[in-house]
Image 1 (cartoon, one colour):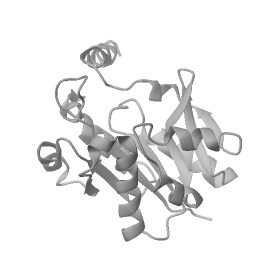
Image 2 (cartoon, rainbow, N blue to C red):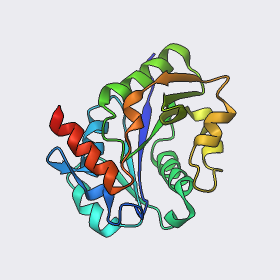
Image 3 (spheres, rainbow, N blue to C red):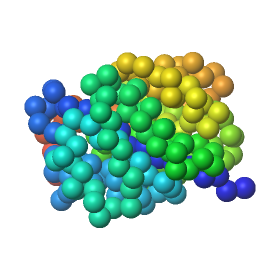
Image 4 (cartoon, rainbow, N blue to C red):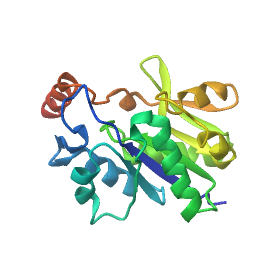
Length: 201
């Protein structure tokens, strides 16, 4: 049986600790947001939803040629949960027959298409309600959520994102070790370390 899995990229934040739109930072010859989109498009996920907010006018042109659906989250200041709600809402309006969705972040540049496909394969094999990533002693995204949890994703509030939901179902879900997800870009130092790591490789 072939499952239909969508993917939501969260990219609506103001990047206050970075001091500029981190979605537009250069990485491997393109912006972080474009890198995230190209990784998603190279995976088995379809459709791809990108949720924008704080810098929508600057970021949106980057995505125009790409086969993704852009959602503008006017409530982005309420936190990550508002972006998840916006993304799920778009998915439900346009793709009612989805079996599950993967939620990912625009600022986890080491996450690859293979990681998304690993989440999908694990879901196909187990059909657990959640397949989440474990890294740096935490459990989080990228994570896959069965459509049975779409109503609960639509009720999330605050800036914790989907972490509370992952914790709620951790005993009945599946946790994969994904060390690549530990690298996220929040501060200028994070970005400097990413470029240095990339240079050394």
